Length: 213
Image (tube, rainbow, N blue to C red; front, side, top):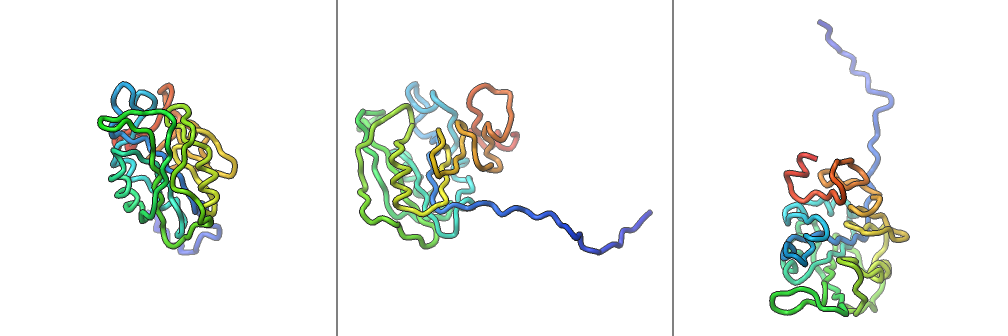
């Protein structure tokens, strides 16, 4: 039996690269609430549970002083604020995107979506003249207006990250099912960082799938 008593430090210990952190993030999560019907988002792409959205390490991706812009709609408006706080941000304001077409709704037919602004630490906005409402064209399902990226860049300093992105945008890192992602998020595999034998989208839609991925 050999006892290894060598206590000499490794002259070249592995160095873990620091994770890039962002001062402005857009999050467009695939909410499950009210989206299971024939015309809901479930017919377009996989959804995530509320618990899986809340457990995302958004706070770890953000700088100590950062802004997060979090998309929601009327039936997720209340829980979105709770999730923001769980990520380490305080809710400070909101922007409303008015659409030129009616959408779904059990009471009002919704023609808007809301972008919540959360702040981590202390980070004032760079532009004080931004209106809280704009009518912007509706495109394909859940495609948010590119004008939003420009608005965020006026309001907040970079680096910039869009989560659940559907296409690249100049000056931004992106992550999601439909893009070649610039980052990996442990427990949340996307096609660009994990290979699976399922055609089409491969988002994690519940905690059990995340554990088995």
